Image 1 (cartoon, rainbow, N blue to C red):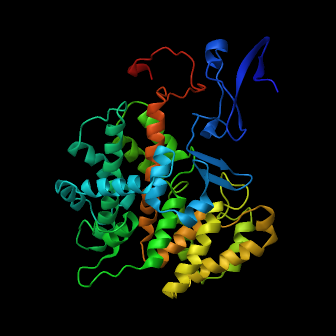
Image 2 (spheres, rainbow, N blue to C red):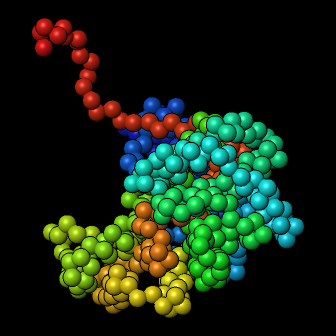
Image 3 (cartoon, rainbow, N blue to C red):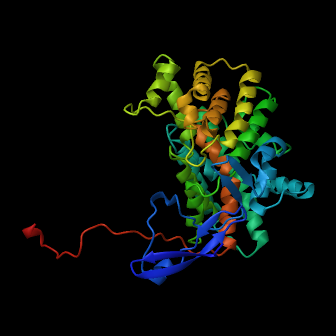
Length: 427
């Protein structure tokens, strides 16, 4: 096969290099296209544009494959701890026991936040959306640790990563507890990473905390499944902000803001809002399945299908089992969750949805689990951000180590041609 692609523009033929990925993905290198032809490509949403070469995550939407650093998501979700996966995403290999113990110990040593951050949190109204608060507090952390990371020093990079892995879970727990009117604390650092996250969030001040292993395992799986997902909106945001040599905290804060949107991380919140609307309208799932199939009806079935996966979302298969287990072991009796199970059953059996491969996705099942754990709808995307944190760190590290140029997309101008200025008296 030729290692060149040929592009003919009017009478000029241009040769472009073909890039072959490790999974035999093909790309055309157009980085010199404008210099050689004064022509650019137009690709709204960048759906057909590769912004980088990355060794972190492989995703095949047609076959329903997701791998982190070569490891299948199925095996990682079954066998790994979230902190192991975080190390894998950032450094490319699973940690040995010494490395994992050191990482947890170093995180614990950095798990204190300047008390002035609490004052900032307390000045937000309780009605403020948790994602806005988390993004703001992440940016605020820069003021308390203003030194830039020396990207040429692995020790400096490691310290920065440990710092943010230590502090973001505390902020997540504080945002959750502030919303519930509970006291803010730092958890118990004799526990594992995920175990401590759950304790920081769910410990009540008037009773002894008893760890629920079903809850811990479900959250561990959810965090792993959300760890990375290739060049999505928030990850691309982290990379493009970082490409200006903005710091790690600033880049992560930007990623959190990008994740907030309903078309991205906010989708699992949208699922529960849809289920609540169906319940308020009588809970007739068949009625809403018919509305979803009616192209003239504005109703959209949230949590089904995926922009990338043209088959079953591999993460959804894993988290469906966890969702069933959580609902069973916790003995949850909630009409909204019954509506969710009804929609799931009908979608998996309805030929309209089967033919179009509109299967329940990870947002559908994660929303069900968070609802069962009594986590408010507005906190769903915050939990997503907590899981995506190591993926963002990994991409920021890769982008800086590869010395990628500053992101600067082009455009096709469609505005007015040159016009003469008209004085205000003549307008």
